Image (cartoon, rainbow, N blue to C red; front, side, top):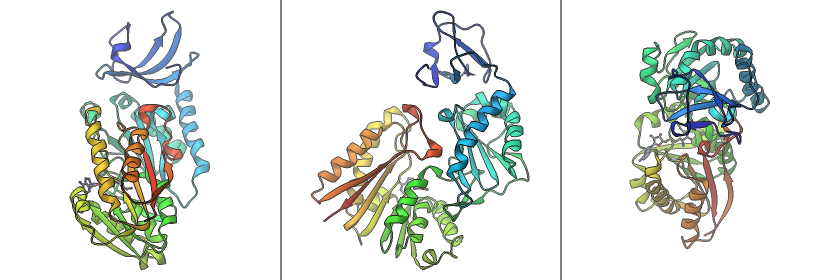
Length: 384
Ligand code: SAH
């Protein structure tokens, strides 16, 4: 805790003064009975305490909470202008809000709760968020493990906490491109905000290229590639729902001449099968951004093997001079393991190639401790 780790496991609690309910404020004392930290108590989870504060005792009152909220908001204001109205206001532990995420999509806020410890504070949060940010709507999203406790407290996933009953999809801007986010039912909070920097990079690599976007979801990378001047963009995704969303996102941006000009094609397929076939054509840029392939530590080795396979197959689709971008959002696969795997494949592929970039978390998703680090991307240029 003193070095900033935000979790205390059940097995580390030596003594407790009472049973405590989920979300109670817990005070942690060290072995000499001195105040050490303040956190949110979860008696039903092995992750027993989520740290809010370490150091000198503080009064954890409304002013304290609002001060903490303002800190996260003020930090981000300089990073975004009116061309980007979708980004993360609060990124959990790393912002001092353990187990809580707040995303902005235009005038809609999505509050996502990953632990029942926040349920007793939802109504306070709504008041503070309305005062600080004045959103038109606030949508509540719940992780699976907090849904039953939420039901008891009268909350459900996708519910509107403030404002007009929300449409299932809202639109917002990212770098001047218009996207929709499925805030009520979509994965995470409806869009993968965390890939913004890689999307921007893709735009700069796409001029005059044919681009293959594998695991394309709602077409985020595809749209940046198109705006960057790609002649053709091909989405591959297993989900017809995701492909339809990508088509809608293209339709939202037809006033951008280069987007309108680009040929946009889609393939509905299992990417692992599809990529392993003999390439029908080769691309100047191939993007591999699969879903998390390791949901637990036990799946780590299998995930690394799956990345190896993906990169090996994906490589065949890159034309000489082209770029391969491989990304991973598996927290259980470290950046060293992921980069190591990709490098091994590339160096063993028998094609001259060079690595030119690795990319981690964007500013609004900064990770302050090891378990929070999940996002990594690596770029290689194939010379032959
Ligand atoms: N690259 C996207 C995020 C990817 S999310 C972005 O930047 O927005 C993962 C996507 O992979 C989802 O759209 C999901 O439908 C798709 N997917 C999952 N398993 C797949 C498979 N085996 N083959 C193809 N697509 C798959």
